[in-house]
View 1 (cartoon, rainbow, N blue to C red):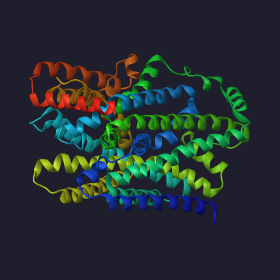
View 2: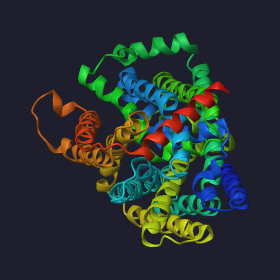
View 3: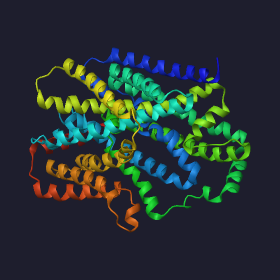
View 4: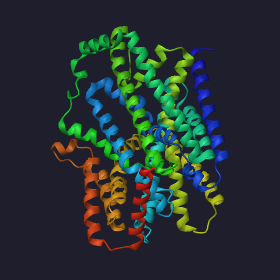
Length: 496
């Protein structure tokens, strides 16, 4: 068996393992709560690693190492912003969201939580937030499929369309069958694979480049600016990079894990596991890039694409079968994000939109419709990805800011400020979304041109929520009762 055959064998083993987990999830899925939220039964380790794996995507394995390889440590600011944002998300949002979604009519999706939290009888919050999820995540899924297809094409010389079909089929099967449980369990395994690969590659690469000290000496010879946190960047650039952390509180596929954890008292353990995993992965990705700079300088190997530094090193340094397992880490990053986004999109179609059309519907019917929604969204996303489109990729580049600026302040203030109203939420969501869409197209002819659209979008959302809520606030006994009950349960969980 040739090198490519051994690599494909290793990836085949990985994909079969994902399908087995999907089948097990199918056996455990009994009702809609199981399919959409795992019956709120996730342990802290699964919650933590599934949230991390769903978050990071191929950016962790390719985009971030490629950026550090090309521009040096100045690119690490985005990693710092993400780590701080993720920590604060686990610390402040996770426990409150877990108890409040249960208190607010046992909400199992973000749009249904918005409606139940603010007692929105207009249905606008539920409809608008569901449509935002549906549109943005369809593009997100399509982008992930493109990345997976390109991966197979560039690594194994398979055709782009063959890679697309393989990736789409495996993700579709285990997501379709096992729902949220399968997605969470596969994300957990994929998170372990990603961590192992990101620690192993720089460790072996440092051995080939003469150790840590020699490696850094080689990098300094190549370009001393590569080792500077401030070289080649500006204050606005640093603020924009750090602002990525603001997006966490508004990412539905991440915060839904907070809703699914077994109890609020387990959030603390999950936070430690999740942030520990994240720090180790980001350090591994950073050191992969740095080791790669020294490795290619000392050995004479050439790297045609900076974003392929992780993939190339994995294939150079290891036996083909082991290289295949390392490469499966890239697929794990891509697939974990796609599957998480599919299940959230499915919930938006079934629990949040279909229920508005047909109120009296059985759980069995909704689970069937949930699976059908996964199939439909996957087919649409795959069709969009069939011909690579810069338009799709450009739209997805704004999706993180779009979700962060649209949903982030609504989630955060909704958990902490009982006087926030449904009209404040709607106004803030609209202000954040519009700002993100419009900001990049305005020529300010100043430093504002370099400011990440997340910053103004998030801030304007907060301002609109505050002003409109003050203007429209009316005491609501049920809202105040649920707010107090959520705080009581939160305090109770901390006491235990």
